[in-house]
Image 1 (tube, rainbow, N blue to C red):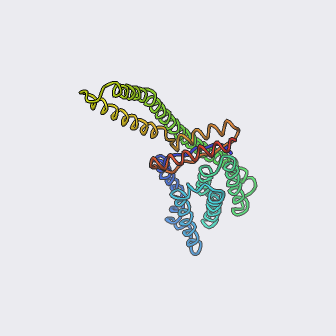
Image 2 (cartoon, rainbow, N blue to C red):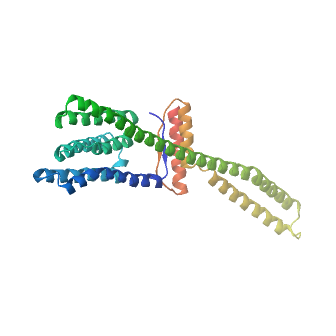
Image 3 (cartoon, helix red, strand yellow):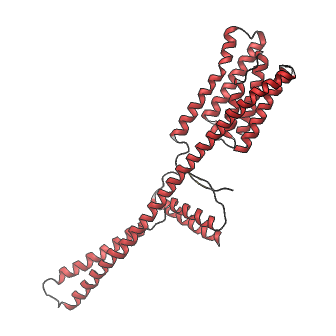
Length: 304
């Protein structure tokens, strides 16, 4: 299983605007409005035509606003299949073959399916369109071949563009996640460096002050002026050392992001592919430290 990292909010601003922009594809349904305005569909066919068009638009609206994030094994193929079947129904009932109805299924297939499955879906949608011309529209073979010459480039260009755009968006998302991961790792390393410097430099100096103060209190006889002040200095230096240790302990607490990054690197070095999904949001320091220790111990056990 390939390693993947997902962090931050579930949907970025760009993805939200992308969904809204995808709604503009409904302009391809303009032939439906034209047919109704011209009165080309009559009687029961008009009712079936209208219901099919409303259902077609509803499915695509639902997909753009809610269904796009459901990239499971069922929802995307079902959406593509239902839209393609409704496209056939609209063409058959409307009495006019239109490629526009098949472009939206191509759009959904390109954006919602993995590349290989998307290519297969594009081929199936194109095949359905050609079979419609051959079986339902009952066109002669020569006209079907001519239509195929016109349809295949449209399917390839439109579907290939959507697949390429989807790949570009996924790549940008991975780069954004990798950049955030690098920043979190750098912040964690900086915390460790500050903790080390505090412990090595300030802790060493305070230890010397405490030691010198204790030695001075032993050398000074009781009752000599300044003995109490020296003892106060020793007490203050001990308190300062305790505070430094507490601060260093806080800085050295593991963070979840740092431990997940370290776990991914360690497991990859051990020949184990890992998928990291970090969508937990903000955590308090204690909870994050506990989860960080859990990830560290679990990684150690897996590597062993």
